[in-house]
Image 1: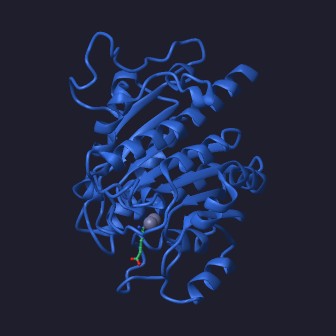
Image 2: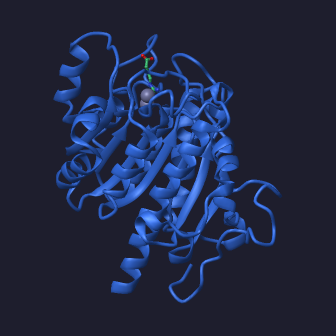
Length: 323
Ligand SMILES: N=C(N)NCCCC(=O)O
Ligand SMILES: [Zn+2]
Ligand SMILES: [Zn+2]
């Protein structure tokens, strides 16, 4: 979209009921209806990298379905994200479910193409494996990026059954490949049993800081967001959100649930506290609707993607104003 065009927003819910018609994210236009977008929301229906319960391949479409009720004005950030910038649904990246290496390459190539049009990416997973090719692509454009990783898990393990590309290993691969800015890496929301203490030692050596789920409970969302913002500064930032960062009460529909997580309110508040960061792209992964109830998980994921999209749209609009 050029700066003097008005973005095409969601379907008007006062004329066409929200539950009618095919679901796109937030009832936004499809990317092919608007040509190019400032923010492309794309699904990655891939879950061949999971170590426990499968089903995240259905996550993207579950999030789209649950996003029908999102409204155009976001009071928490005082912004109308879909009026400030063109946000559009780019559909799904079709990936090979039987060949993880090929799937990883396909995701990277598709992300290259979308980022090449000038869009920022809001990806809906899919399992956490997909963060690696997305980070590779983002780093080609921006250089090594700061990473905020919301998750119950570290996802910096080495291999599973000898496999390098799995949902428990994307961030170790990313550090090895030099595509992360190791001065600004944080896990947020981690908890639960590990394989051994060495997991933490290895993780720290890679450069990660950790804000545990218990830290959030003790210190509160505002203080945590302030600390993260200071660490990130104005570096290009990628946010990766594994929905299992939330407590299973707030996100039962996921493959590797861990007790004692943050609430969806805490997650949304931390994200709002990061609104001034230079968010270049983001993902929300690990929504597995088969284990969900009443769309609890996919509603939380859709609101999470909405906050992330709002941050990106506000920055795009502010940059246009300055130009
Ligand atoms: N949910 C993600 N991304 N990773 C969980 C891996 C935990 C495990 O297999 O021990
Ligand atoms: Zn996880
Ligand atoms: Zn994860």
